[in-house]
Image (tube, rainbow, N blue to C red; front, top):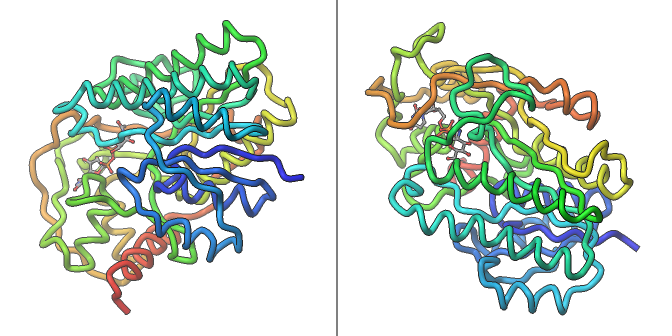
Length: 342
Ligand code: UD1
């Protein structure tokens, strides 16, 4: 019988791509999502891609009673992948309590039930935001974490600590935190992808919406950084490459191949690219000209970060495989599909 994996936030952007990869690797999936930032139609599209509809329950994991009720009814879960969280950096500055409550309490509720029902394994969605602006690049997993720039970033750092401490106190638990760099792109089928509510805050959705005519122009935030072309540098990773790393992390835990009960991996490509390189890359990959303008730096942005992926390459046997053009083209194909552009 297939192992059952619980995926929280499984109708969201990274979650939905991970559900597809899990199902295609032979796992059975139960999604829990409150649909606060995703739609129920994602289930249809996952089914179109994989031929299997994941199990699904809609509720908020910060609700202690509903979470307890779910675990009382759903036995046989072998591992949890915890994506469900608020993720808008700017909004987190305006609503810190909403972010701390949602992101911290949902993890605590999950861990309580893992202990109660002896569910040994958890993979947690962390972020390179825990490194702040690092002093040395690229960053390895040993690079010291810094004070976060936002409540959102703080929740990722604190959740890592909650996981670390809970695993230390409960020898039967095992966990992996995956620190994502900048996930972009969409499934090659163009059936699932990133669908931001309202005006996109992140670079690639803003680019594709500008190309689609929904936005007048892309604002490039700053060209006076200490980088070769003056714009800020990030490590942009195809969401399908990222999703595949989750399957490997789950298999590592289920087969007890982990070296310690709590492990951390960077998930990036290992290459840093500037905002202007992404703009040029998009134009090259799609043949669509982008209307863009250089404006002031965005408050809270760091100058540059990219990953050293040696540890993930060696330990997980995982490497990001998709190139920039394929990645940006997949984002554009998704946007065109959503907007009905031929
Ligand atoms: C940040 C966090 C990341 C988090 C994400 C969620 C860091 C290093 N990264 O990503 O962990 O998951 O927020 O939102 O803290 N840009 C423009 N114009 C735009 C939009 C963005 O020039 O309209 C630039 C930004 O200034 C930045 C780059 O594009 O240099 C990427 O920005 P974005 O996609 O928002 O991601 P991060 O801020 O890197």
